[in-house]
Length: 611
Image 1 (cartoon, rainbow, N blue to C red):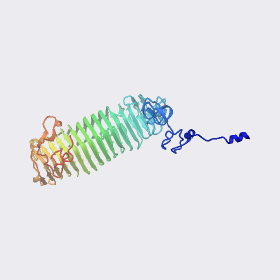
Image 2 (image 1 turned 120 degrees about the horizontal axis):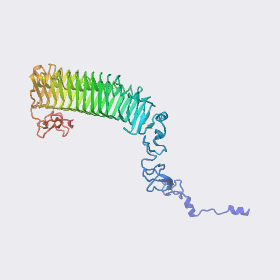
Image 3 (image 1 turned 135 degrees about the vertical axis):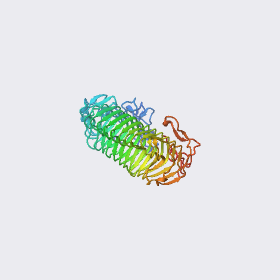
Image 4 (image 1 turned 120 degrees about the vertical axis):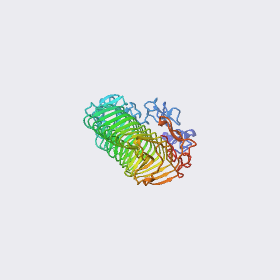
């Protein structure tokens, strides 16, 4: 009992040093002995840190405690390779790299043929929508069904080959399909698709195919849905077929089209039938093409032909180049053929191509379009030989067509039996040509209409240079720079200089402006006419033309350069003393100094361009 009493009366009072260890001076709930700073409630227990050798914010090895971060440490662990900053739990897995970027413990999400699966078929059977199946370098036999929503990715063009034995498609799609970084070859078609599917080809080369030579063939045909071509190349393709070549490469139907970098080279197609939409043919889908380069493309068809043809839909074209190519047709030949719908075009160049056909021949055909807006369209060294009518640009009916910053240079029209020009507008077309240069074009014809011809249409020229163009033939009837019938013309700030008309038999009606009937109106303002051989300035009042003339100039424009055999070296900018400076419409101002507009292609609000 005495012992118990003594125990109950033992002194348990803490001395000052013991109390200091358990007190919480800043009230943050962490006692002083554990608190990194007990005078700051925002600072409590020490943190966990890992050694981070590669500085990617993730460390490896065992964690340790510290009240402050140390140099060469990270507050997160789990780094599976602390010598490589691109491998850590914060990275996203890069498909088919062979590396475990996110440190999940499995490279390429476990979908590599030859590593995680013995065969391609096993990998595809195990794949789910959204998965990427990795195909190593080598040659793989196609012809299989691709699960919908699955991506098949190779190691690169010319490294991974996916091919058919030639008796069917390279791949059969069961739904949406993506093929990436490989070369496709050997099939009677690339992909056998299902309706309304999305087909995506990215970083793909299309090699030698086994397209039919007896029946209608298509490299790829869609029924609705969408086609995406991203960094795709077709380096060589030859086909001589007894059937038509309509939609031979991509027959889209109503499918939408998205192109980002498509390269065509050394294509040669001969068809015993028609070749409508040889590259792209559609019936109303929306097309967006950004970056198309074509070199050495040749087409010959017994019937009518076109390279691109869409009937309806919104079409957007940007950064397209066609060079050193030739096209022949047994009927009409429309290089780019668009009907209805709309067109937004920018930075299009057609350089050194030839068109040969007995029917209507044109580079750009716009028929009944709702609206057209084109900027930086350049047509260089186009050669057209036709027994029919030839127009570099044809506009038929429809809504407004704006051709801005457009160049027609060094075109040759060989038309022994018909007429032609740089522009043909008809059936109530409404065409606005703004800031354009037309230089060194030549026409050899039996009878030539105007270089710019309007029939039952409205055409407006603003800030245009027509320089050094020449037309020759047996009869000079209706040789003219601009004109037409039942048309309304407006000409502002435009210069006609050094153009020539030559007729070997007779020359009747050759003129800068020519009206073929009395139902023509002309507004001519602040425009210049100088040194046009065989083409006097006569506004056609004798034909009953209704006209309004304001401040006509007759002066040497003093261009920087208009001599030399290569018109592409001409420079239609004005020398400092040119009388066309500040001689344009006073209601328009120049882009470079906001002064009164200059006359010619490089004045006005949109004059900052070069052909």
